[in-house]
Image 1: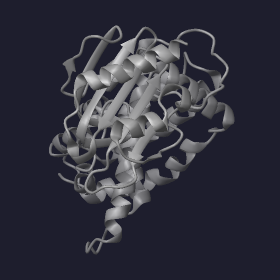
Image 2: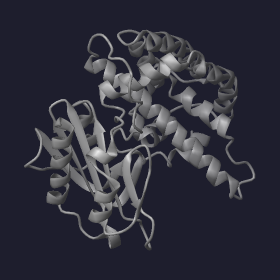
Image 3: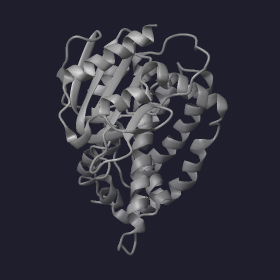
Image 4: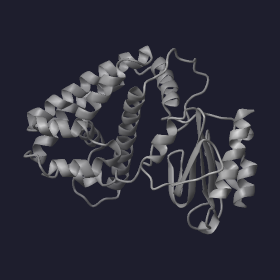
Length: 330
C-alpha cells in the first residue's frame, strides 16, 4: 500500500547531513549533572524528526502552490500524518527524554509521550500490526522515505484508512505545543548544546569575521546571522560561501560525520574528517568541501564553497579550523 506519505516522502531523502542546526541561545545557566549518551541520542532523534517534518511540510506547501494536482496535500494533514506514522519512534524517544534532563523538558516530554501513545493507538486501529509498530519504532529519522515506503508496501491498510486516522490525530498535534514556554525553550537550547545537536552562538568578529571570509572568497559577502556564515552577494551560478560553526560538545563530531562519506584529515584537533560539499547552519550545497574537527570538548565545522566551484583543499580548511580553535582557547 502506498499512501500520500509516499508522494512527498521522497523530499526527505538526502536533505539532512548529520545534525545541521541553528545556533542555540547564549547565556543559559549551567545545568546540574551530565547527560547520558542515551539521552543525547534520543534528543538528536527528536530534533531530527522535528526538522525533517518541518522541511517536508514546507516543501510540500511550496510545491502544491504551483501544482496542477487537483488534490494537493494539505500541510496540516501532512504534518499530522507524518507525526502519526512516526508515533512509535517518537513515543519511545519521548519516554527517554521524560527523565534525566532539566525539569521543564521532563514535564514537556511526558506530555508529548501521551500524544504519541494516542498516535500508536490510531495506527493499531487502522490495521498496523505489532510487528509493523516495532519496525516504525526502529525507523532511522534521516532515512524516512526508504523505511516508510518499504514498510507501507507490507501493510494491508488503504490510503483512506490512513487519512481517516490522521484526521483523528490532528487535534492531538495541537497538544504538542502545550507547556512549551520560555523555561522549556531555554532548557531545550542548553540541552541541545550539551548534546552536540545545536551549535553555539559565538562572536564572529573574534572567531571568523566577515572581512576574513571576503578575503578568502575574493568577493563581497552578506552574513546570514546569527551564524558566522558569509555568502557572496554577486556572481553567477551557485554563490561562493564560507562558514564556521562551533559546537560546545565533542559529541557533535559523531553526529555530523556518521551519515557522510568522509576521509580522515591530520594536522588539527584530536580527530578531523572532511567530505565533499558545503554543510553548515542547515545550508547544504554540492560545491566545495566541509571539515569537521573535534578538539577536546568542542567541535568545529569549517565549510567552504569557492567561486566558479574551484576546488577546495583540505589544508585550506585545516588552517581556518586551527585559527578558530586557537581563538576560542583565548
